[in-house]
Amino acid sequence: MSTSTHFERPGTSSFPGVSRPSEARASDVCVRDGRVRVLLTDGRVIETPQVWYGALVGQPTGDLDEYELIEGGRGIFWPTLDEAISVAGLLGVPD
Image (cartoon, rainbow, N blue to C red; front, side, top):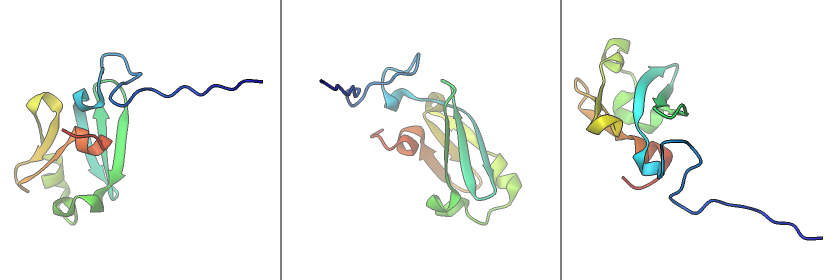
């Protein structure tokens, strides 16, 4: 009996409209209850611990709600906190 396992090549994606993970774009961000939740334009949701981003810890909700999507959604920037994170970084791939 033969078994076969299929794995995608690095840098490919099975999500429509995203040919490489580094092309993923954010459409919405929410920082609540110790979690950073990012909705991507392809429908995926990335959620990470807030403590991974020290500048976001202990900040007022109003400051956390004041973010800008930069570079066409490739990054998230909190101007009052002077903190930015990349969507590729959230996915663990190079920018």
